[in-house]
Image (cartoon, rainbow, N blue to C red; front, side, top):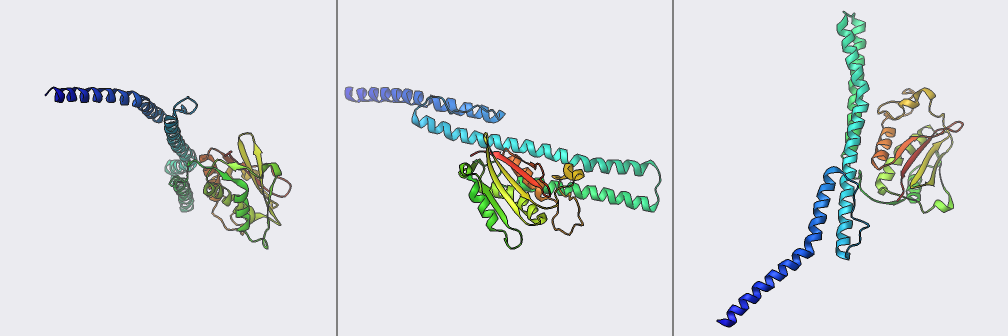
Length: 291
């Protein structure tokens, strides 16, 4: 009986010591978990990297940092989507309201009524195009996903898909920039550049060029052509969905490629814009975070 009692006491002591040791060992994990929950709720920029920790906790911190980065990217994308929807829908909504107010202000003849209906219909279709463009891109899983991509192979792959007999595509990159990497997955980089390349091929006279440069903390990619360029009075509308400088110019396209390219670039933390135009051509510039 004394032996059994001693065994019971030893087991209780062992349990207490083990529980205390495990609790103390897991206390940093609980602290890190609580911190991650608080930081994720506010999209905080606080991260676990940099603090000295044991190897196991350092790996846990790296995993939590990646998780927090994905949450922050998703929240940033949601805010960007809401902002762009609000901004892009404001103009067609204003058109509809103005036409309805004018229509109700006084009687109109049949021609004026048809004109008002046509204007309202065009504004409504523009709103639908804007919503389809932005929401379709918002559904893509690749948005905001961390990744790095070597730039030059993507440019060469895009050039290889074109027909050099129609319009040759030249890829240029300085020797010191041949190892450039962008902080986006390859699929996202291709989807950003493809609409710009298609647009350049559509209007180029003899050639299209793809150039890559290194900038502080960023990668700069230029897509240029030697076509007629962008009319001065159309530059403010260039990246609006469904807008084209001259719908009757004989070229296909619905005016959605450039807005999609900008949308993707901004979602990846970059920008797509019209660069300084050379004589007889247009240059589109894409800036992305460096990998």
